[in-house]
Image (cartoon, rainbow over the protein chains, first blue to last red):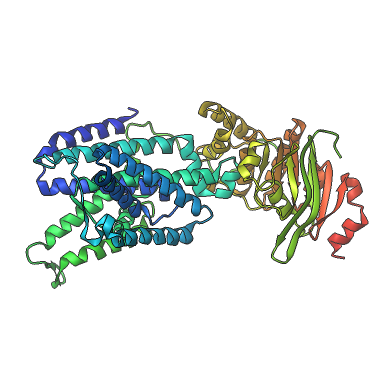
Length: 349
Length: 241
């Protein structure tokens, strides 16, 4: 049955929405934050995985979206949805500008450039406390101020993630998506094939930054306070780990990575609760392992997981499962013929 | 020289890399129906000239005109849109994309193109190049010769007026080289214009209708292959004199 995977996804989504009410407030919060990171991981994967632009400023764009949205509310009293749209527009503009400035950069040069930009944004927000409230944090207006539970936020985050994925999915499946992948593979050959490389690179930066701005805008109106640390390097590293562990060359696997990392981080926090230490006994060897301050060990564990992923599963841990899932219901095809066969046609005829 | 309409003109092309003059006031004209062999010893400036004539390098002096329109300084996709296609000295494919996707990229950059139309044309060119059975394979899995053929196919998807092929026979199995020559000749008979750079003199002399020789950044001969190969300046350049 063709499209079985879509039916399964829709069914699972319906179940999640139906039973979301049953989640504890804590796990519902974790799920909402996972969806926030999901939008960010997918949009970063659009930029880094599809176009090959390894940007380290993605979280900076999330904070630009968040601060723009709240500051416009503070200054002009505009409604939250409108301020979020303005935040997205601002991110698209600044993202396009950054894309234009670093047109000739790639690899480590691009990474260092965008890291520099990210730090400028963070320090500017922290320093301009007259405007941004600096390190004390800017108090924000909530999207649903009278909501008794987090459920409306859950549904909103779910809708934003779904819409973002659909829009990005349509983009990568369009001819533009094909051009973006061609640019990732070989910019020179893409240009020779008629692809306007500069235009598409700028476009990719603008679109990915816009989605980061959307996520940032949502975050600003979910958590009642935003701080400059929202766009710091730790957050960027966390996003990178999510996308790489999930699989940065596919949008759904990047989202899967965001969920996996966010939920596992919280689960490990659970383990650490009640004393801050974890005690294991290795059964055969009889060795006792005791980790004090296990909470601090959660991130190094992900560092190790990242290293193992890069070494043994460079396409991400979720990608093989996702590809298998995508083939559900499809008829099996015979393998392609031998690759290195010489042409069968006689050159002389 | 062919008597067709002028397609491209490089006027007084100068290109320097630091203190090295790779192209020193080179004039190069391509007319419709040409099949030009561009030869010269290593470092004579052939690839630099192609890079300038296809928009991949900005000339330090001189001008490039495509059908009378000045295009030097504009990006490569503008050249492609004006019917100038090229392959690269070291094959540059979209390695992790399938053979079909490699063909679709240039096909879909053409104005008013659709997926169906581009896929139909791609299949027909893949058939022509004997690659149709490999269309779903990633390009990196093709053999060297097949990669050269695919690169030619990708050029053809632009429906170009002139094709620059940079060392198409380098490192290719003799049978595939013959296949490639056969395809180039067939396309030329159908009215395509080619500029072929290669060190394989036998192949170049076999297909060229006009031969251009470069040495030390300058054009030293241009004309009928039979006449050029007996030119004393050319013999001296190849002998390193």
